[in-house]
Length: 452
Ligand code: IMP
Image (cartoon, rainbow, N blue to C red; front, side):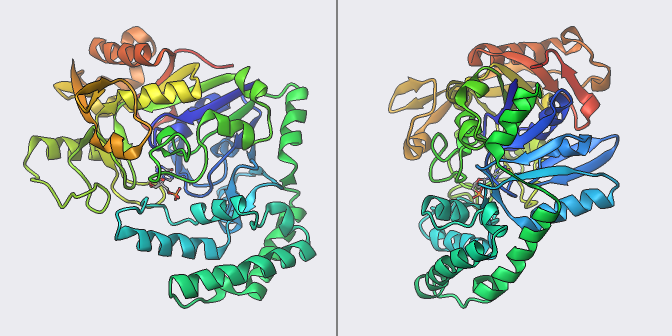
Protein backbone atom coordinates (compact mmCIF):
# COMPACT_ATOMS: atom_id res chain seq x y z
CA UNK A 1 0.00 0.00 0.00
CA UNK A 2 1.07 3.59 -0.52
CA UNK A 3 0.52 6.71 1.53
CA UNK A 4 1.19 10.03 -0.19
CA UNK A 5 1.89 13.15 1.84
CA UNK A 6 1.10 16.40 0.04
CA UNK A 7 1.39 20.02 1.13
CA UNK A 8 -1.95 21.75 0.59
CA UNK A 9 -0.71 25.32 0.70
CA UNK A 10 2.61 27.01 -0.09
CA UNK A 11 5.09 24.68 1.56
CA UNK A 12 6.21 24.60 5.18
CA UNK A 13 2.95 23.04 6.34
CA UNK A 14 4.82 20.62 8.60
CA UNK A 15 5.04 17.66 6.24
CA UNK A 16 8.21 16.43 7.94
CA UNK A 17 6.32 15.82 11.18
CA UNK A 18 3.59 13.82 9.46
CA UNK A 19 6.09 11.80 7.43
CA UNK A 20 7.89 11.12 10.64
CA UNK A 21 4.72 10.18 12.51
CA UNK A 22 3.19 7.84 9.96
CA UNK A 23 6.58 6.84 8.57
CA UNK A 24 6.77 4.37 11.46
CA UNK A 25 4.30 2.22 9.57
CA UNK A 26 6.23 2.48 6.30
CA UNK A 27 9.22 0.48 5.13
CA UNK A 28 10.33 2.82 2.38
CA UNK A 29 10.00 6.60 2.14
CA UNK A 30 10.36 8.13 -1.29
CA UNK A 31 10.57 11.72 -2.39
CA UNK A 32 9.04 12.29 -5.81
CA UNK A 33 9.98 15.86 -6.76
CA UNK A 34 12.08 18.85 -5.85
CA UNK A 35 15.61 18.86 -4.56
CA UNK A 36 17.52 20.53 -1.76
CA UNK A 37 15.00 23.37 -1.67
CA UNK A 38 12.83 21.47 0.81
CA UNK A 39 13.51 22.20 4.43
CA UNK A 40 12.47 19.46 6.82
CA UNK A 41 12.91 19.74 10.52
CA UNK A 42 12.38 16.62 12.56
CA UNK A 43 12.70 16.69 16.32
CA UNK A 44 13.46 13.32 17.80
CA UNK A 45 13.95 12.95 21.55
CA UNK A 46 14.93 16.60 21.87
CA UNK A 47 17.46 16.36 19.01
CA UNK A 48 16.73 18.47 15.97
CA UNK A 49 17.57 17.23 12.49
CA UNK A 50 17.40 19.59 9.54
CA UNK A 51 17.40 17.99 6.12
CA UNK A 52 16.81 19.58 2.76
CA UNK A 53 17.17 16.65 0.38
CA UNK A 54 17.19 13.17 1.81
CA UNK A 55 13.89 11.78 3.11
CA UNK A 56 13.62 12.41 6.83
CA UNK A 57 12.43 8.82 7.42
CA UNK A 58 16.04 7.63 7.24
CA UNK A 59 16.47 9.04 10.74
CA UNK A 60 14.22 6.21 11.91
CA UNK A 61 16.04 3.54 9.97
CA UNK A 62 13.72 3.48 6.94
CA UNK A 63 14.99 3.19 3.39
CA UNK A 64 14.93 6.66 1.82
CA UNK A 65 14.59 6.90 -1.95
CA UNK A 66 15.03 9.96 -4.14
CA UNK A 67 12.70 9.24 -7.03
CA UNK A 68 13.24 10.03 -10.70
CA UNK A 69 11.16 13.22 -10.33
CA UNK A 70 13.75 14.72 -7.97
CA UNK A 71 16.68 16.91 -8.90
CA UNK A 72 19.70 15.86 -6.89
CA UNK A 73 22.65 17.96 -5.84
CA UNK A 74 25.22 15.28 -4.98
CA UNK A 75 27.15 17.72 -2.78
CA UNK A 76 24.09 18.17 -0.55
CA UNK A 77 23.29 14.46 -0.72
CA UNK A 78 26.67 13.47 0.69
CA UNK A 79 26.84 16.36 3.15
CA UNK A 80 23.54 15.27 4.67
CA UNK A 81 24.49 11.59 4.72
CA UNK A 82 27.88 12.37 6.28
CA UNK A 83 26.32 14.59 8.92
CA UNK A 84 23.86 11.89 9.95
CA UNK A 85 26.72 9.40 10.08
CA UNK A 86 28.71 11.75 12.31
CA UNK A 87 25.70 11.84 14.61
CA UNK A 88 25.76 8.07 14.90
CA UNK A 89 23.10 7.12 12.33
CA UNK A 90 23.51 4.79 9.38
CA UNK A 91 21.16 6.21 6.72
CA UNK A 92 20.09 3.92 3.87
CA UNK A 93 19.57 6.25 0.89
CA UNK A 94 18.89 5.15 -2.70
CA UNK A 95 18.79 7.44 -5.71
CA UNK A 96 16.92 6.80 -8.90
CA UNK A 97 19.22 6.53 -11.91
CA UNK A 98 16.63 8.58 -13.80
CA UNK A 99 16.79 11.53 -11.39
CA UNK A 100 18.45 14.64 -12.78
CA UNK A 101 21.59 16.14 -11.32
CA UNK A 102 21.96 19.74 -10.18
CA UNK A 103 25.30 21.07 -11.37
CA UNK A 104 27.06 24.20 -10.08
CA UNK A 105 26.09 26.19 -13.18
CA UNK A 106 22.42 25.60 -12.39
CA UNK A 107 22.82 27.45 -9.12
CA UNK A 108 24.64 30.32 -10.82
CA UNK A 109 21.94 30.57 -13.48
CA UNK A 110 19.18 30.42 -10.85
CA UNK A 111 20.68 33.52 -9.20
CA UNK A 112 21.24 35.54 -12.34
CA UNK A 113 17.85 34.81 -13.81
CA UNK A 114 16.14 35.84 -10.59
CA UNK A 115 18.10 39.10 -10.64
CA UNK A 116 17.16 39.68 -14.26
CA UNK A 117 13.47 39.09 -13.52
CA UNK A 118 13.44 41.40 -10.53
CA UNK A 119 12.96 44.54 -12.60
CA UNK A 120 9.69 43.17 -13.97
CA UNK A 121 8.49 41.80 -10.62
CA UNK A 122 8.67 38.30 -12.07
CA UNK A 123 11.24 36.76 -9.75
CA UNK A 124 9.81 33.86 -7.76
CA UNK A 125 12.07 34.43 -4.77
CA UNK A 126 13.65 31.04 -5.35
CA UNK A 127 15.79 29.25 -2.83
CA UNK A 128 18.74 29.69 -5.20
CA UNK A 129 19.44 25.98 -5.25
CA UNK A 130 19.37 25.66 -9.04
CA UNK A 131 16.07 23.81 -9.05
CA UNK A 132 14.41 25.65 -11.97
CA UNK A 133 17.43 25.58 -14.32
CA UNK A 134 17.89 21.84 -13.70
CA UNK A 135 14.25 21.07 -14.57
CA UNK A 136 14.64 23.31 -17.61
CA UNK A 137 17.49 21.14 -18.82
CA UNK A 138 15.48 18.01 -18.07
CA UNK A 139 12.63 19.26 -20.26
CA UNK A 140 15.16 20.48 -22.85
CA UNK A 141 16.65 16.97 -23.06
CA UNK A 142 20.09 18.22 -22.19
CA UNK A 143 20.19 17.25 -18.52
CA UNK A 144 22.67 15.03 -16.71
CA UNK A 145 21.11 12.13 -14.84
CA UNK A 146 22.34 10.13 -11.87
CA UNK A 147 22.87 7.14 -14.20
CA UNK A 148 25.21 9.30 -16.32
CA UNK A 149 27.50 9.88 -13.35
CA UNK A 150 28.18 6.15 -13.29
CA UNK A 151 29.38 6.02 -16.89
CA UNK A 152 32.53 8.09 -17.62
CA UNK A 153 31.98 8.26 -21.37
CA UNK A 154 28.36 9.30 -21.15
CA UNK A 155 29.11 11.88 -18.47
CA UNK A 156 31.90 13.42 -20.55
CA UNK A 157 29.68 13.53 -23.66
CA UNK A 158 26.79 15.13 -21.81
CA UNK A 159 29.00 17.81 -20.29
CA UNK A 160 30.73 18.55 -23.57
CA UNK A 161 27.36 19.17 -25.17
CA UNK A 162 25.71 21.22 -22.47
CA UNK A 163 28.39 23.22 -20.69
CA UNK A 164 29.39 25.45 -23.65
CA UNK A 165 25.70 26.36 -24.06
CA UNK A 166 25.44 27.29 -20.41
CA UNK A 167 28.65 29.30 -20.57
CA UNK A 168 27.40 31.20 -23.59
CA UNK A 169 24.10 31.87 -21.86
CA UNK A 170 25.83 33.23 -18.77
CA UNK A 171 28.42 35.27 -20.64
CA UNK A 172 26.64 36.43 -23.77
CA UNK A 173 23.05 36.78 -22.57
CA UNK A 174 23.52 37.71 -18.93
CA UNK A 175 26.97 39.28 -19.32
CA UNK A 176 28.66 37.66 -16.33
CA UNK A 177 32.17 36.28 -16.07
CA UNK A 178 32.17 32.52 -15.62
CA UNK A 179 34.52 30.38 -13.54
CA UNK A 180 34.97 26.75 -12.50
CA UNK A 181 31.21 26.19 -12.44
CA UNK A 182 31.32 26.24 -16.23
CA UNK A 183 34.56 24.29 -16.74
CA UNK A 184 34.05 20.90 -18.37
CA UNK A 185 37.18 19.25 -16.95
CA UNK A 186 36.59 20.47 -13.41
CA UNK A 187 32.95 19.40 -13.52
CA UNK A 188 33.83 16.03 -14.99
CA UNK A 189 36.37 15.26 -12.23
CA UNK A 190 34.04 16.34 -9.45
CA UNK A 191 30.92 14.57 -10.74
CA UNK A 192 32.75 11.36 -11.66
CA UNK A 193 33.89 11.29 -8.07
CA UNK A 194 30.29 11.56 -6.91
CA UNK A 195 29.41 8.80 -9.36
CA UNK A 196 32.09 6.55 -7.90
CA UNK A 197 30.78 7.09 -4.41
CA UNK A 198 27.20 6.38 -5.49
CA UNK A 199 28.48 3.14 -7.04
CA UNK A 200 30.65 2.16 -4.09
CA UNK A 201 27.78 2.67 -1.67
CA UNK A 202 25.38 0.89 -4.01
CA UNK A 203 22.93 3.78 -3.93
CA UNK A 204 21.73 3.90 -7.54
CA UNK A 205 18.44 2.12 -8.25
CA UNK A 206 16.01 1.74 -11.09
CA UNK A 207 13.46 3.58 -8.94
CA UNK A 208 10.16 2.38 -10.39
CA UNK A 209 11.06 -1.29 -10.38
CA UNK A 210 12.78 -1.04 -7.00
CA UNK A 211 9.56 0.32 -5.49
CA UNK A 212 7.29 -2.08 -7.37
CA UNK A 213 9.36 -5.02 -6.08
CA UNK A 214 9.05 -3.71 -2.57
CA UNK A 215 5.28 -3.47 -2.92
CA UNK A 216 5.19 -7.05 -4.27
CA UNK A 217 7.12 -8.11 -1.19
CA UNK A 218 4.41 -6.54 0.99
CA UNK A 219 6.26 -3.38 1.97
CA UNK A 220 4.44 -0.17 2.79
CA UNK A 221 5.59 2.82 0.75
CA UNK A 222 5.29 6.41 1.82
CA UNK A 223 5.63 9.11 -0.82
CA UNK A 224 6.79 12.42 0.51
CA UNK A 225 5.93 15.55 -1.45
CA UNK A 226 7.99 18.68 -0.98
CA UNK A 227 6.73 22.29 -1.26
CA UNK A 228 2.94 22.57 -1.67
CA UNK A 229 0.00 22.61 -4.06
CA UNK A 230 0.07 26.35 -4.72
CA UNK A 231 3.77 26.08 -5.61
CA UNK A 232 3.02 23.35 -8.18
CA UNK A 233 4.20 24.31 -11.66
CA UNK A 234 0.82 23.33 -13.17
CA UNK A 235 -1.66 23.87 -10.38
CA UNK A 236 0.02 26.64 -8.41
CA UNK A 237 0.34 30.39 -8.77
CA UNK A 238 2.47 30.37 -11.91
CA UNK A 239 5.09 31.88 -12.38
CA UNK A 240 5.60 32.20 -8.60
CA UNK A 241 6.04 28.47 -8.25
CA UNK A 242 8.65 25.78 -8.05
CA UNK A 243 9.48 23.83 -11.21
CA UNK A 244 7.95 20.46 -10.36
CA UNK A 245 4.63 18.83 -9.34
CA UNK A 246 4.21 18.53 -5.58
CA UNK A 247 0.59 17.45 -6.20
CA UNK A 248 -0.48 13.81 -6.09
CA UNK A 249 0.01 13.27 -9.83
CA UNK A 250 3.70 13.97 -9.29
CA UNK A 251 3.85 10.96 -6.99
CA UNK A 252 3.24 8.71 -10.02
CA UNK A 253 5.47 10.38 -12.58
CA UNK A 254 8.14 11.11 -10.00
CA UNK A 255 8.48 7.55 -8.72
CA UNK A 256 7.54 5.25 -11.58
CA UNK A 257 4.63 3.79 -9.64
CA UNK A 258 1.32 3.74 -11.53
CA UNK A 259 -1.66 5.97 -10.63
CA UNK A 260 -3.47 2.86 -9.49
CA UNK A 261 -0.82 2.22 -6.82
CA UNK A 262 -1.14 5.79 -5.59
CA UNK A 263 -4.93 5.89 -5.94
CA UNK A 264 -5.50 2.65 -4.07
CA UNK A 265 -3.60 4.11 -1.14
CA UNK A 266 -4.21 7.20 0.95
CA UNK A 267 -3.44 10.80 0.16
CA UNK A 268 -2.95 12.97 3.22
CA UNK A 269 -3.15 16.72 2.81
CA UNK A 270 -1.04 18.69 5.22
CA UNK A 271 -2.62 21.95 6.33
CA UNK A 272 -1.04 24.60 8.45
CA UNK A 273 -3.74 26.18 10.66
CA UNK A 274 -2.85 29.58 9.16
CA UNK A 275 -0.90 30.45 6.03
CA UNK A 276 2.74 31.20 5.31
CA UNK A 277 4.60 31.89 2.11
CA UNK A 278 8.30 32.18 1.28
CA UNK A 279 8.86 34.19 -1.84
CA UNK A 280 6.81 36.40 -4.09
CA UNK A 281 3.31 36.08 -5.54
CA UNK A 282 -0.23 36.95 -4.40
CA UNK A 283 -1.56 36.03 -0.97
CA UNK A 284 -5.11 37.39 -0.49
CA UNK A 285 -5.23 36.59 3.24
CA UNK A 286 -1.78 38.04 4.02
CA UNK A 287 -1.27 39.98 7.25
CA UNK A 288 1.18 42.86 6.89
CA UNK A 289 4.02 41.98 4.53
CA UNK A 290 7.71 41.20 4.10
CA UNK A 291 9.87 43.59 2.12
CA UNK A 292 11.18 42.14 -1.10
CA UNK A 293 8.50 39.42 -1.11
CA UNK A 294 5.13 41.13 -0.75
CA UNK A 295 4.50 43.13 -3.92
CA UNK A 296 4.69 46.88 -3.31
CA UNK A 297 5.31 46.49 0.43
CA UNK A 298 7.80 48.93 1.90
CA UNK A 299 7.11 48.36 5.61
CA UNK A 300 3.86 48.95 7.49
CA UNK A 301 3.04 50.72 10.74
CA UNK A 302 4.48 48.35 13.37
CA UNK A 303 1.82 49.52 15.86
CA UNK A 304 -1.12 48.62 13.65
CA UNK A 305 -3.24 45.61 14.67
CA UNK A 306 -2.46 43.83 11.43
CA UNK A 307 1.31 44.18 11.70
CA UNK A 308 1.21 43.13 15.33
CA UNK A 309 -0.83 40.06 14.46
CA UNK A 310 1.64 39.21 11.66
CA UNK A 311 4.60 39.54 14.00
CA UNK A 312 2.84 37.50 16.68
CA UNK A 313 2.08 34.62 14.33
CA UNK A 314 5.53 34.76 12.70
CA UNK A 315 7.30 34.61 16.05
CA UNK A 316 5.00 32.08 17.72
CA UNK A 317 5.14 29.86 14.67
CA UNK A 318 8.88 30.27 14.09
CA UNK A 319 8.11 31.37 10.56
CA UNK A 320 11.61 31.75 9.26
CA UNK A 321 12.77 29.60 6.33
CA UNK A 322 14.50 26.31 7.22
CA UNK A 323 16.69 26.50 4.13
CA UNK A 324 17.19 30.23 3.71
CA UNK A 325 16.41 31.72 7.15
CA UNK A 326 14.20 34.34 5.43
CA UNK A 327 11.19 35.65 7.39
CA UNK A 328 8.08 34.04 5.92
CA UNK A 329 5.02 35.99 4.90
CA UNK A 330 2.07 35.05 7.10
CA UNK A 331 -1.69 35.31 6.84
CA UNK A 332 -4.98 33.72 7.76
CA UNK A 333 -6.04 30.35 6.47
CA UNK A 334 -7.10 30.60 2.83
CA UNK A 335 -10.03 28.22 2.32
CA UNK A 336 -10.43 28.73 -1.47
CA UNK A 337 -6.77 27.67 -1.79
CA UNK A 338 -7.49 24.59 0.29
CA UNK A 339 -10.61 23.65 -1.69
CA UNK A 340 -8.47 23.81 -4.83
CA UNK A 341 -5.86 21.59 -3.17
CA UNK A 342 -8.46 19.05 -2.03
CA UNK A 343 -9.78 18.74 -5.58
CA UNK A 344 -6.40 18.52 -7.33
CA UNK A 345 -4.95 16.03 -4.88
CA UNK A 346 -7.96 13.96 -3.84
CA UNK A 347 -7.21 14.03 -0.15
CA UNK A 348 -8.43 11.03 1.80
CA UNK A 349 -7.31 12.51 5.11
CA UNK A 350 -5.91 15.69 6.61
CA UNK A 351 -3.21 16.60 9.07
CA UNK A 352 -3.71 20.06 10.56
CA UNK A 353 -0.61 21.56 12.14
CA UNK A 354 0.28 24.47 14.40
CA UNK A 355 -3.08 24.88 16.17
CA UNK A 356 -1.06 25.85 19.26
CA UNK A 357 0.33 28.92 17.45
CA UNK A 358 -3.18 30.41 17.23
CA UNK A 359 -4.01 29.65 20.87
CA UNK A 360 -4.47 32.75 22.98
CA UNK A 361 -6.01 34.88 20.24
CA UNK A 362 -9.48 36.28 20.99
CA UNK A 363 -10.62 35.49 17.50
CA UNK A 364 -9.25 33.36 14.70
CA UNK A 365 -10.01 34.48 11.17
CA UNK A 366 -10.15 32.59 7.89
CA UNK A 367 -10.59 33.70 4.30
CA UNK A 368 -13.77 31.72 3.52
CA UNK A 369 -14.22 32.85 -0.10
CA UNK A 370 -13.02 35.54 -2.49
CA UNK A 371 -14.75 38.36 -4.29
CA UNK A 372 -13.59 38.88 -7.87
CA UNK A 373 -15.35 41.33 -10.21
CA UNK A 374 -18.32 41.46 -7.87
CA UNK A 375 -18.76 37.69 -7.75
CA UNK A 376 -18.12 35.29 -4.91
CA UNK A 377 -15.55 32.56 -5.67
CA UNK A 378 -15.13 29.45 -3.57
CA UNK A 379 -11.88 28.37 -5.17
CA UNK A 380 -8.78 29.96 -6.74
CA UNK A 381 -8.99 31.37 -10.24
CA UNK A 382 -6.62 29.78 -12.76
CA UNK A 383 -4.52 32.84 -13.49
CA UNK A 384 -2.31 34.39 -10.93
CA UNK A 385 -3.20 37.89 -12.08
CA UNK A 386 -6.88 37.23 -11.31
CA UNK A 387 -5.91 35.60 -8.05
CA UNK A 388 -4.01 38.77 -7.17
CA UNK A 389 -7.21 40.76 -7.73
CA UNK A 390 -9.25 38.56 -5.39
CA UNK A 391 -10.38 40.03 -2.13
CA UNK A 392 -10.84 37.63 0.72
CA UNK A 393 -14.19 37.42 2.51
CA UNK A 394 -13.32 36.69 6.09
CA UNK A 395 -15.08 34.65 8.75
CA UNK A 396 -14.14 34.71 12.38
CA UNK A 397 -14.16 31.96 14.95
CA UNK A 398 -13.94 32.35 18.71
CA UNK A 399 -10.35 31.74 19.81
CA UNK A 400 -9.08 29.11 22.24
CA UNK A 401 -6.72 29.40 25.17
CA UNK A 402 -3.45 27.55 25.33
CA UNK A 403 -3.72 24.27 27.24
CA UNK A 404 -1.16 21.70 28.26
CA UNK A 405 -0.91 20.30 24.74
CA UNK A 406 1.15 17.32 25.85
CA UNK A 407 -1.86 16.20 27.91
CA UNK A 408 -4.23 16.24 24.93
CA UNK A 409 -4.86 12.61 24.11
CA UNK A 410 -8.28 12.60 22.52
CA UNK A 411 -10.48 14.80 20.35
CA UNK A 412 -12.50 15.77 23.44
CA UNK A 413 -9.34 17.03 25.18
CA UNK A 414 -8.95 19.76 22.56
CA UNK A 415 -10.48 23.15 23.47
CA UNK A 416 -14.05 23.30 22.15
CA UNK A 417 -13.42 26.33 19.91
CA UNK A 418 -10.39 24.65 18.42
CA UNK A 419 -12.57 21.61 17.59
CA UNK A 420 -15.11 23.90 15.91
CA UNK A 421 -12.33 25.41 13.79
CA UNK A 422 -11.00 21.98 12.82
CA UNK A 423 -14.48 20.66 11.99
CA UNK A 424 -15.02 23.62 9.70
CA UNK A 425 -11.77 22.85 7.81
CA UNK A 426 -12.65 19.17 7.53
CA UNK A 427 -16.17 19.95 6.25
CA UNK A 428 -14.96 22.46 3.66
CA UNK A 429 -12.33 20.02 2.36
CA UNK A 430 -14.47 16.92 2.53
CA UNK A 431 -11.85 14.85 4.33
CA UNK A 432 -11.40 13.56 7.87
CA UNK A 433 -8.72 14.87 10.15
CA UNK A 434 -6.17 12.16 10.86
CA UNK A 435 -3.94 14.12 13.18
CA UNK A 436 -3.47 17.52 14.76
CA UNK A 437 -0.09 19.14 15.38
CA UNK A 438 0.07 21.08 18.63
CA UNK A 439 3.79 21.78 19.08
CA UNK A 440 7.20 21.02 17.60
CA UNK A 441 7.82 17.62 19.18
CA UNK A 442 6.65 14.32 17.86
CA UNK A 443 4.78 13.81 21.13
CA UNK A 444 2.81 17.02 20.56
CA UNK A 445 0.63 15.34 17.98
CA UNK A 446 -2.92 14.18 18.54
CA UNK A 447 -3.34 11.08 16.41
CA UNK A 448 -6.98 10.41 15.53
CA UNK A 449 -6.52 7.94 12.71
CA UNK A 450 -3.77 6.19 10.81
CA UNK A 451 -3.52 5.62 7.06
CA UNK A 452 -2.09 2.13 7.69
P1 IMP B 1 12.66 27.09 -6.11
O1 IMP B 1 11.95 25.83 -5.75
O2 IMP B 1 13.96 27.28 -5.35
O3 IMP B 1 12.83 27.25 -7.59
O4 IMP B 1 11.73 28.32 -5.65
C1 IMP B 1 10.50 28.59 -6.28
C2 IMP B 1 9.47 29.08 -5.27
O5 IMP B 1 9.14 28.02 -4.39
C3 IMP B 1 9.96 30.23 -4.39
O6 IMP B 1 8.87 31.07 -4.10
C4 IMP B 1 10.42 29.52 -3.12
O7 IMP B 1 10.38 30.35 -1.98
C5 IMP B 1 9.36 28.42 -3.04
N1 IMP B 1 9.83 27.25 -2.29
C6 IMP B 1 10.68 26.30 -2.72
N2 IMP B 1 10.84 25.37 -1.77
C7 IMP B 1 10.09 25.73 -0.74
C8 IMP B 1 9.82 25.13 0.54
O8 IMP B 1 10.30 24.05 0.91
N3 IMP B 1 8.95 25.82 1.34
C9 IMP B 1 8.36 26.99 0.95
N4 IMP B 1 8.58 27.57 -0.22
C10 IMP B 1 9.43 26.94 -1.07
